[in-house]
Amino acid sequence: MLRASDPARRLAYASNNRKEQAKCEGTSRMTFDLGLRGKLVKLTVTHDELGEDGKTSRDISGGRPIKIASLKSMLETGNPLPVDMLSQRKKELSCV
Amino acid sequence: MSKPEFVYVTYIKTKPERLWEALTSSEFSRRYWFGTELRSDFKAGSPFALVVDGKATDTGEILEADRPRRLSYTFKHELDDEMRKEGATKVAFTLKPHGDLVKLTLTHEGFAKDSKLLDGISKGWPAILSSLKSLLESGDALAIPLHALGIEGVA
Figure 1 (tube, each protein chain N blue to C red):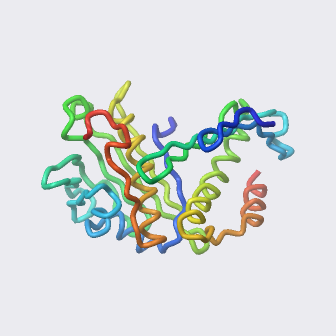
Figure 2: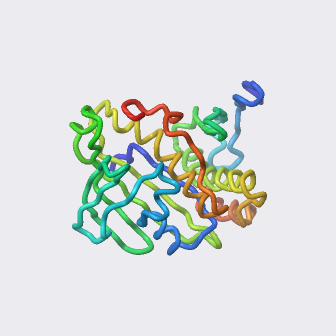
């Protein structure tokens, strides 16, 4: 569910952790803030309203940084990072 | 165990040895770290300093240097009066191979209550490490204007 959309500046949406073990943690909030810094864009990703059990927090801490790192590589070099996201995802799930 | 006050994780398409070189050599750091030179022999117990235009901005001591896996040092700011009074904090880099990538984790901890230094490094490290990733992957560091970071006490 979209919570906020301010094109080129802010995007926020509600996010459900679909993993069986974390379903009871309910809906969290993802926010992307984009700020100009000279010729660059500072991207701040905030994932909050996380469940108290900490399962969603643990899952995203394992998965978000590599996706954001790959996004940066793709925009700057034209190529995403050579990561198999599916096997990465399986690896995350296997850690549950 | 309490969590470090600052944690930054990124993935870089490079080799651990090259990333280690970038974290310990002025030839690299001048390009991605706002013209900063790294003064140390990077041996445990040795002094460490960040130097800009001949002036030491931050100083410390090497705690661990396990090439190319882990580097940590104490970190004390020297220029801003308020930040200098806060005393030494601890910086640690962990480099872990991840397929063709290296996972770089930076933790910075041990800050005083209501630390001004924590606010400063929280604005500085993301820009520095983002520029480091660009340099290693594309050959060009980022042209981030230092004043655009909005760090109080830093021009």
